[in-house]
Every structure is written in C-alpha cells, then in structure tokens.
Image 1 (tube, helix red, strand yellow):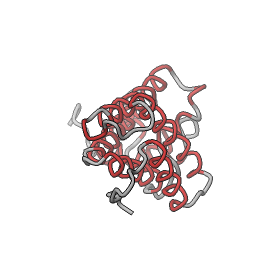
Image 2: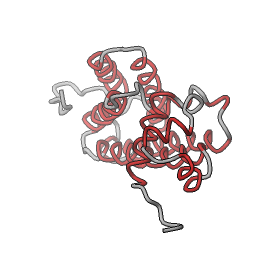
Image 3: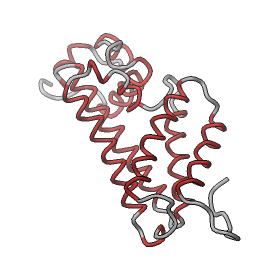
Image 4: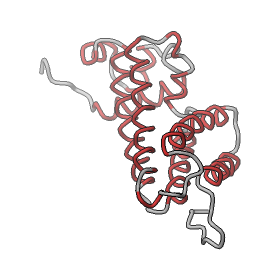
Length: 202
C-alpha cells in the first residue's frame, strides 16, 4: 500500500551503520546502502530523503546503544572497577564489528572537516553526552577523594583517550594491548590505595 514502508527499518539502520562504519560517509553511496539492506534506492529516498538523513538516523541508533552501555558500566560503585568496565565497553565497541574497525564516531570524525553541520553537530553531541555521563559517575560519593584529578578533567581525559584507542585499533593494535593501556590510565586517574583489594575485572 502507498505510504506504508515495506521494509524493516531497524534492520535497515543496522545494515547502514555497518556500512558507514566500514567505508565512512563519503565513500558510501545510496547504491551501496540499497545493496547492503536489500531495499531499493527509490524506497530509501522516499523514506529518508537523502544519504545524510539515513546516516543521522543510523548514528542516533548507535549513540543510544553506546551511551546506554557506558552508563551500565559506570553504574559499578567502585570507581576503579567502573572506569575499567567503561573502557572495556569502549574497546568492545571498537572490536565487535565484523566489517569495520574503530568506533563509528571516530571513523566519522576523520571526515568531519568535509561533513555537513548536522553531522558535525551529531558527533559533538555524542562526545558531550559521553563526557557528561563520565562526569556524573565520577562525582558520586564513592569517587570522592579517589581521583588524582578533578572529575571534570578525568571525564575529559577519558573521552580523549577513547578516541585515541579507536585510532590505534584501526591500525590493528591488539585488544590486549588496548586493555593494558586502559588499565594504566585508570591507575593514573584513580590510584589504588595501599593494601586495597583491586575490584576491577581482570
């Protein structure tokens, strides 16, 4: 029937996300998206208008999933264990995709100079939300007196560090090395107390 979509939008956005992650925005065409999703180009244009809108919809899906995973990891009471779990979650996000390396945010940030204002705003929004999520977790009473820097500095440093991890992962750095680097950063941000049992997941 006219006006009723004849495809599974969630499945389409999942396929689109994987393609943008693997090839980037510029190198991905509507023909590529149609082939990957099994949806005709005309239907894609009718549903989303253009490639940018399709990307933004798939990126919003990615953002919601990643931030929810970050919040779950940071809900751990012990700050060292929470930060370790968060960084493990970030590394899992970089290494889980079978087609693309690194995270979608960093993949797109590499093209940001040529991206539209809407795409740049989308990237900034995710990073600002991530920083706010980290800051809120680091301001909890359990983290008081445990940080070597302020919660604001720690949150910012963690966001910057995860972007660096994503670049290294794209250069085929082994996940074990990334995790070792992540644990070293946690030791710097939230040093262990003398005689303290390390509650981090090893």
